Image (cartoon, rainbow, N blue to C red; front, side, top):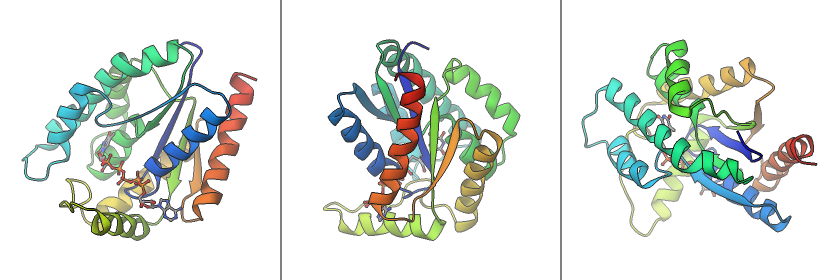
Length: 217
Ligand code: T5A
């Protein structure tokens, strides 16, 4: 990896990743840092096409096809966007990355975790985040935020492939993220995202400032 800094936000649906990616990026830019926000799936043009199939509940997908689609999205994302940005010294904030595959396709869908880590090695080309923040909230809290957001939208949409899964599925995803954090405490930090937006963003900022102090004082 070049001189850039790679930060990922992970967590269950509605845990606040998109909101906090933006708050963090705005704060870092105000401090004079060069920052991009990206996301998976869909961070590239090819990824947008993959995302449309991946999330559409009306498209029948075998679980192996679902897995390979999200890995294809990542392989393109890493090579087209992440590696060049990191090589240019940018701070890259990604809303979801490789840990989502371990949590969703592994802990929740049941694929072998070591097999997924091997596939992630191929898709990521070995690029792993310097810091991953798991925004942790209870599943009903996250889902309630999503349905509130949907009901307030000007053009309401149906739940996507994952939002439509049952509570047990989302509970396994949450557990998966917490186990990933337990297994890799040096890289992955958990923030309670049921706190106010201000408190969550302050905790995220503290973790990021610690990282930046170590990486580029
Ligand atoms: N997926 C993805 C896989 O299965 N495998 C993989 O490898 C990958 C990469 C992507 C889906 O793909 C799956 C997982 C996902 O299901 P997506 O559309 O990109 O789907 O959606 P999500 O990443 O799940 O993002 P969401 O939009 O659903 O949720 P966020 O981004 O976590 O939440 P956000 O920030 O939009 O917040 C939701 C609402 O809550 C409010 C916000 O204002 C917003 O209205 N909110 C708070 N309110 C009060 N207090 C707080 N602390 C709040 N934080 C946020």
